Length: 143
Image (cartoon, rainbow, N blue to C red):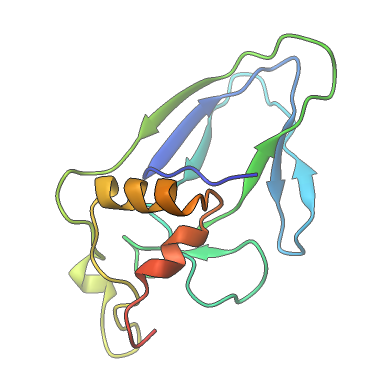
């Protein structure tokens, strides 16, 4: 089980094997059946941050200041077949990532400290937190 550390993942899943599962609001994993000819788009940690647990498995946005969501996911081996998936990762900018100014106001105060993808990647690696939990370490003192 993990979240993707970057900003965005585009996945061409194996149309014949399957195995991708996402965590729902109840904390249960549900299968994502392959759909021929489609791409799956998943927000990563740089677009999301776990703030306060509204309910299990929901992560609120760093870049969006809590307005976009992400879920934990995993891949299960269901059959002894070769599974081929092609993923393209948009990791994050080299500069500091913070919410868009128009998404921060009195009703939606800043909820995390600005960071870079590289600093976040190092934090995630050093803490061995791979399912979005490392982002909780980036909360602002008031969140």
